[in-house]
Amino acid sequence: MKEEGIEIAGKLMRELLEGMEMKARVEVSLKGEDLYLDISGEKEDILIGKHGKTLESLQFLFNRMLNKQLKEGIRVFIDVNGYKERRADSLTKMAARLGERVKRGEKPLTIGPFNSHDRRIIHLALKEDHALTTESIGEGEVKRIRIVPKSQTP
Image (tube, rainbow, N blue to C red; front, side, top):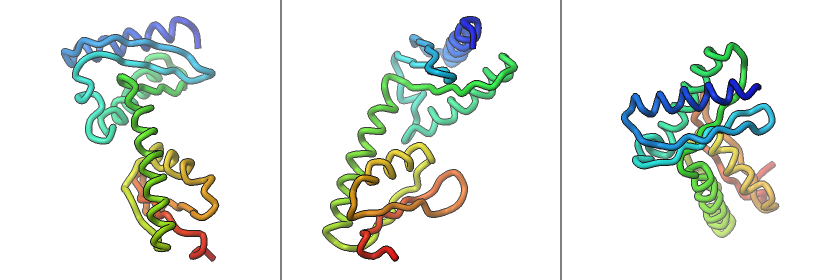
């Protein structure tokens, strides 16, 4: 992707935020083949939504808008005031806490529902624990996670 594409992405996001009457700074960077937009400003909760649902939707729509305008396929990731890092940290700590509870009680535990990104964080957080296994259950985009003691897996 050329510098022109980075400029178009920044301009498009700033226009979108202005249309929402939000004052925010947009930083655009290219990491490998992916484009990252970091938005910082006030009223972050409006852009993030409950459990990041609004941010997830904004990212999906912005991907479609930008790729249509650029006429090429590029993945765009959007973060607001470091929310995604805070969310990942929170999910990792939650997974560790619940993993300990499952090991103490020797009973499986089902949590969720979570989107694919959040499920991946939880699976990775418990992957190194040799006493536990995790699995996604359900259908569609939003699934639950089952944490099972390895003593109960076939």
